[in-house]
Structure formats: structure tokens, C-alpha cells
Image (cartoon, rainbow, N blue to C red):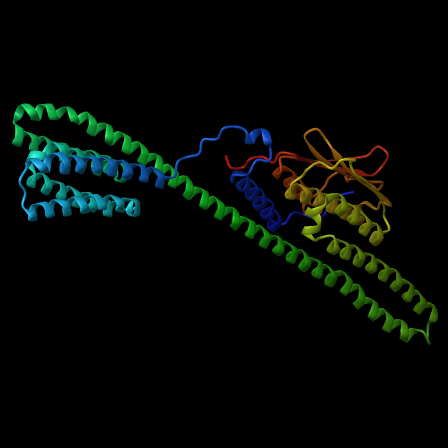
Amino acid sequence: MTDQTESTPLENFVDKLIVVQTQVGRLLPQRSKNKESQKLPVIKPVHPKITALFFVGAALLTFLFTILEFFIFDIPGRVLSEGELALNITLFSVFGGLFLLYILIERFPVLVNALIMIQSVMLIILVAMNPESAPDLMVLTFPLSALAAFFLRPGNAIWWLVFYFSIGLVSVAYLYGIRESIGFGTTAGAYAVFGVIGGLIRRSNQAYYSMEGLYDELHDTHTQLTRYSAGVRQLAVSEERNRVAREMHDSLGHSLTVAVVQLEGAEKLIPKDPERAAGIISNMRTQLKNALGELRTTLAQLRADDPDEVVGNLAMALTELKNNFAQATSLDIQLELPDHMPTLNTEQRLALYRAAQEGLTNVQRHSEATAALVSLKTEEDGMALIVADNGKGYPAEISDGRFGIRGMEERAEFFGGRLTRLNRQSGGAQLQFFIPFQIPDRNG
């Protein structure tokens, strides 16, 4: 028995595409069905919108206490005109309302920069209008510093931190003197803390968005690979049908053409030389029987080439393959299956089925055997498919171009398995196709 059918480039591409699709599918998060694993604590990342709400909420809370102190304690001790009071109320209202916009523009640094600049200008106007309340109003630079560190890149955020600290230092020095400004210098640590905390959380949010984007790309890639693999399978089926059509045209078409010519010759010889005509008809009958056998084999392969049937149930597919070949070739084929079929993925089942199909095809074509055995065995680390016959065995030298042994070896090696062949002591040949349960990881 020998192996005739070589793996085509399209089949090799299908195998590789299926493996890539499987590996990508394994990277996607799957819901665990194991109850024990569901009890394990899982730390989920906080959504950036939630952290943004926290920062804006803290800023609003600081702003609320600042304006309460300003209007309850500072304003009653001063004499303001109605216009000054209205302008203070308007500036404070707009200043506080602008905090709410950060939630909407948090993914747009240019707009965040503009918003911080507007609030900074408004804060400077408020300090200029209310110099006695400057220390209280300068407290608002702390939430602005935190928002700058949270929403902006480190380079831009640092400039804002330095700016707020500088205007605070200058304001205190101008209003209260150098001594008080030195005391204000101790707040530099507070600005640094706000900057570090905001920057760290910003980096965490960037990682979140990056992982979210990678997941979306991975999901899209998996979807595309699933669609591509389905399309390539259809192309493989189409290519196989075209190959079968060519074989029927070349073999059966030739045989029928010769038969027609011989029938015409026999018809002319019947009146003149009946014995010679009978010999021609007898020879033609033998050729037609051979052509009919080739037709049955080809149709058996075509019927058993449905990928959905192959990958759905390996035992049923092998049983039908055995029955079709036995009917088409008159071979006495025995099929041995394990009592318990292990769990195999699509590409593993398809590889084992192809090995059985190619093995039986070559038994019929080259071994001159009358009986064959197809045995599927479960080993410790994989599955082994054995195809044996009682024919003339392997020749001393086998040409890969003729027998396609290399094609089956490449298919086995692709799955991390092996192909072995030997001549049996009782006569005939034996081929073993082995693939492991675990498909090698080709991503590294």
C-alpha cells in the first residue's frame, strides 16, 4: 500500500489558517463553566469614565466649599456694589459649571487645554477683584492641577502645575510679603502629589483604552479568520470537485471513446469475422469494467468530501468512508474505532479523516490488495490512524512525486505528529498517521 495523493498548497493554507484561527480564538476571553474558578476573586479595571467622574466630583466639592466660605465669611465683611456682586456670582457660576464639561471632552486634549485656560483666566480675574480672599481662591488651583494631570499629557500637565504654583507664589508675595510667600512654598509638595496621582490614573486609563482597542482588533481578526476559513473551505471543496471532474474526463472519457471506436469496428467485423469481433467485444467489456470501477471510486471520494460531515462526527465519517470504498472497489475493509472517542477539534478530525481517505485510495490504486484495515487508536498523548493491507507492500524505493509520501508527512509535522510506514511480516504494507492532542503554538 502506498500514498498517492499529495497535499496541495491550498490544503496546506487551510490547515495553517485553521490553526491560526484556533489560537486567536483561545486568546479571546471565555466564560468559565467551572464553578470553582467562578468563586475566585477577580479584580476588574475601573472604567476611565468613572475615574473622570471622581476627579470632577472632587473638583466640584472643593469649589463648593470655596464659594461657601467666600459668600458666607468674606463678602459680609466687605462693601461691594451690586455690579461687583453680580460679576462675582456670574464668574463663580460659569467657573463651576465648566467643570461638568470635562466629562464630555476628556478624550480631546486640545479642548481640555482650552477649558483649563479659560478657568485659569477667570480665577485670575476673581483674585484681582477680591485680593483679600486670594488665599482662599487660590485653593481652586489644586483641583485644576489635578484635572490637568489627569486629562493632559505629562509635558502639558507639568507646565500647568508650575503655572499655578507660580501665580500663587506671586500673589501671596504681592499681597502679604516675602515671609508669607515662603510659607506658601510648602504647597509645592501638594501640587506634586496632585500631579503624580493624576498622572498615574491617566496612565491606567490609557492602558484600559489600549486593551479595549486590542480586544476589538482581536475580535475583528477572529471574525475575519472565521469568515476566511469558511471561504477557503469552500474553495478547497470547489478545487476537489474540479479535480474529480478532470479525472472523470481523462479516464472515463477516454475509456468510453475507445469503447465507441471498438464497437464500431466490431459491428463491421461481425458479418466477416465473428470470432475477431467477439474478441474485440470481450476486450471492450474488460475496459468498461475497469472504467466503472474508477468511476465508483471517484464518486465515493466525492460523496465523502463534505467538510461539515467530516468535522461533525469522525466515527460516522470514517464508517461512511469505509462503506463507500468497499462498495466502489470490492475491497474487504475492516474498521476499528475506540470505545470512547476523545474530544478533538475541527482540524484534528479533518486531518485524521484525510489520512484515512488517502490511505484507502492508495490501497485500491497501488497495493493490489484484496483486504484492508482502518484502525483509529487512542494513545496517551494523541490519536493514531493505521491503514494496512494484504497487498504487495512498499517498493524498495518510493518516489515522493509518484506516491506523495512527503505530502502526508508535512500534514503530520504541521500538527506536531509523525507518519510511519513499514512492510508487514504477514505481507502487505502498513501506514500510521499520528497527531497529538495538543496543537503546537506557532505564535512564538
